[in-house]
Length: 416
Image (cartoon, rainbow, N blue to C red; front, side):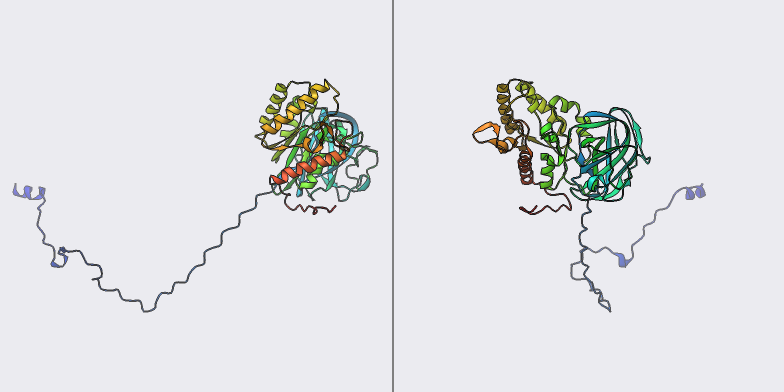
C-alpha cells in the first residue's frame, strides 16, 4: 500500500530562490544605470528628402457631341450617296457618327468621314466608318445607330465631309441649313474629288458627330425654328445663335431645335433627340413661343416645369426668355402679347440661370418690337439678330465660369 501511495501523489517541495535573484525593495532610480558603451564608429544618419507629391492623373478622354441635329421628319430615297458638310465644335483624335432612320426601314451600305474640301471634295483621305465591325447596317424605322470610333484628328470648328451610301427612309431636318452638301445617285462614298450630283442642304440621316477628347463642358440647345436657325428659305446652321455662341465661347453648343415645335412635341421627342446624347453637361431651353395663346398660363408653366424636371438629372439648365413677337400667325395677338410678358416675368423670377434674350433684342420704347435690323418677319431673328442673341448667351455663360475647351484658342477681341 505504501508503494501505491507514493506513485499516486506528487510531493510539493519548497525551493529557496538563489541569492542573486532576491527581489529588490526599491525600484531603480533613473540615471543610476551604468551607461552603455559607445560604438567604435559613430552612426551617421542621412536625411531623406520627402518624395514629391504625385501629379494628379488627367481624366481619360471621352466622347462628347461636336455636331447634332434633331431629325424629326422623314425623307425616302433610292440608292444614293449623300456627302454632308458639317461643322464640329470640339477638338479630339477620334470621331464617332450616329445615324437615324426615318419613318421606314433604312439600309446604309458604306460610310466615310474626312476633312471637308471645296465644292464637295475631301481635304483628307476618307476614313471608312464601321458599325460593330461591319461596313454598314440595316435597321427599322426611327432607329438610331452609332458607329465604331475611327481615328480622325479634328480641331475646334473644323468642317467634316460625311459621305454615306444609303437606301430607304432617313430622318431629316425641316430647314435647309447645311450648304456645301451634295447628293448623287449611286455609290461614291470613297470619291476624294468633288462628289458631283445635286446640291443638298438639309440635315439628313446623320444625327450626331461625337468627338473624343479631354472631358469639357458640352451644351445642347432646345428650341423651335428660332433655335434651329430659320432666317429665310436658304439657311445655314453656322449662322444660328447656338453655333455663333459656340464660336465665341470655344465650347460645343449643338443644336436640337425643331421648327414649329412647342412644349408637347419637345417632351414627346426628348428621349430620341436630346437624352440620347452622351457627354452633355448643360442644356439651354428657348421654348414657348409657339404655345402662346394655345395654352393658358397654367399650361405654359406646367409644361416648362415638366421639361425642366426631365432635364435636370441630365444637365445644368439655362432658360431663355422669349423674343419679341410683332404678330401672331395663330390665335389672338393680344393674348400672345400678354402671355409672353407674363411668361418672361415668371422665367426671370423662377429659374436661377436665365439668358435674357428679350432684353437684348427688344426696342427700348416697345417690348413687343425688335430692334431695327434684328428680325426678318416680325417673329424670326435675322442673321444679325442671331449674332446679338449669341453674344448675350456667351456673355452670361462666360460670367458663370464657362471657359474654352482644352486646346481651343479664341481670337482676341476685335480680331477676326
